[in-house]
Length: 173
Image 1 (tube, rainbow, N blue to C red):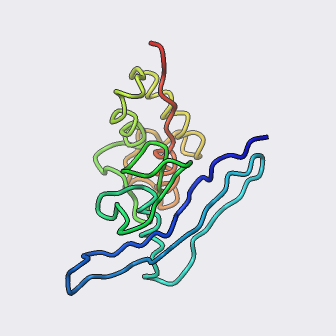
Image 2: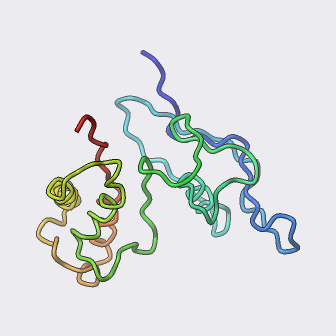
């Protein structure tokens, strides 16, 4: 059996905001870790620590968000591929709800599919079917036409989880 690449790997990663300025701040310094992919073994991995210790910086570097990425030094890898920016292969559920208030649950979930339409090549019906499947999987079946303000906090988080699920691109069409 061949070993799978690590899901996430940080190699001596440092992130300094505003380097060279008097108000420069090093959020993380020389961080090295890896999260291995172990087949048939489910686990949760948590990053814990006090406020301001760099947990969000680590997550934002994994996501490749422009306001944090790239690291000042070191390397961030996802499945042995260097992170160069946001990607469909990574999803994040934010502490603050990340929904468009003017879109329904179903419209919020299909939004990402529409943004990635050139790569995914899904018909409108396929996008909606995929979105409905994930809305149902997170326990929000029957709430597709509701707006974010009509959902509880927990329902909003579950909707965010369904937004992070993306289908594989279709080939050979």
